[in-house]
Structure formats: C-alpha cells, structure tokens
Length: 272
Ligand SMILES: [Zn+2]
Image 1 (cartoon, rainbow, N blue to C red):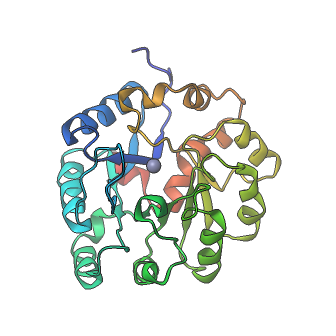
Image 2: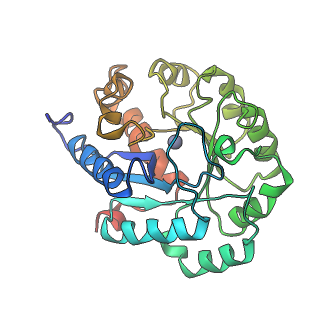
Image 3: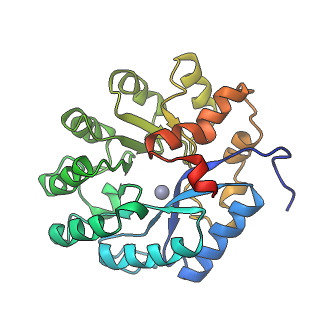
C-alpha cells in the first residue's frame, strides 16, 4: 500500500469502530493496519453496542460495561486508539454502575457514543436523559449517529443540544443519506454542535468553508465498517489528498485540530 501523505500530517479519525465484524480480532487488525497505511495518528473508537439483533447482520449483543472493558483492554495496548463508551439506554438501567466505572476510568474515557438506529431510541427519549446528565457532569462529548430513519433524525439531536448547552454533540455523518446542508443553520446557531465527515462527500466541506464553519467539522470515517478497504473509499481519498485545496491551517482544523478541541486532547500528551 502506497503512503498517501508524504509529509508528517497529524490525522485524528474521530469516528471508528470495534466489534465482532466478523470477529473482534479481524476488526482490530483491519482498524490498526488501515490506520497505519493511511498515516492516521489516532482513532476515536467505540465498541459496537447494538441493543437488538439485526436481520441479516451478525452482531453480538454485549452489555455496555462489558464492551467498554474489552475496549479499554485493547486501547491500553494500542495508545493510538481513544475509547468512547457506547451507551445502551433502551435495554440497560445500570446508570449508577456506569457512573462508578466512569469515575474509576475517567482518564481513559474520552466521551460517549449513541446510535439511535441500533438502539431503536430517539436521543430525545427520556431514557437517554440520565446518560446526558452524566455527559454534562463529567464533560464528555457525545457522538450521535444521525440519519433519515425514524430514530436518528437530526431534529431530535437539535432538541437535545438546545437543552444541554454545556454538552458537546457531534452529529455523525451530518445526516447519513440525507441533505448535509440542513445542518448548516444549526452549526451556526449552536456553539455545542459539530458534525463529522463519515460517508460525507468532500463537496460539503467546501460549503462549510464558504459558510465560515470549518471550526465545526471533525474528520471521521466509520473505519473499519467495510473492512480493511474502508479508508480506500474514494470519498476519503479526497480528504487524504485535500482535493478541495484547503489551506494548511484549514486542513489541520478538519483533520485533527477540531478533534483536539472537542475531545479536550493534548497532542503532546498523546504523542508521548
Ligand atoms: Zn459509525
């Protein structure tokens, strides 16, 4: 595999996964190898916390703390992986245990991940509230899948982002299979709202630039959802090659500096 970046560019992929795809070992291998081959410095990663068996999809249903423990064991060995807790508010009610776990591992947890579609629950549902309260209390950013299915609508996230002004939300995919530009007015009006670039065409980044919103977007890919090849998707080639010719300063924001800010990361500490 040819290296994409000839100069040393820091890249943080703010949206990646681990899970039994098809096995944990293969998913881990695909994630780490593709990161290496594309010079990704760090990946923010969550462990598949599906709450229901999906038709035609091989997935194991694992309690949120068990999954997080597995993830922490992996990220301890691989310092380029930064873990989120994938929450399961539809089927779990162990919020006190989660909080105790969070206190114990605070230094190693970077945020929460919520997937309304696989949880079959809107983020505005009252059952998510205790988790958002934890996010607020411990200053954890929340990565939220947004799409056009009945659970993942962007408007539910907006509702919650307005209520929880102190919590930072990242709208994953900036509405998957939807109109990315619908996020623009809210990126302007809500200081606690961001989007990521997972499966987002780079033309949207040009629009964000026109709107002076390059501070509000984090590079992310969904790696390794399509296996090792995920990052070879032409969508991401455009980001790695900066085909829209962002300035160095703009490109750095997109590829890692906004992620540093949102996730309260210190690059020097991470590189040590
Ligand atoms: Zn994802």
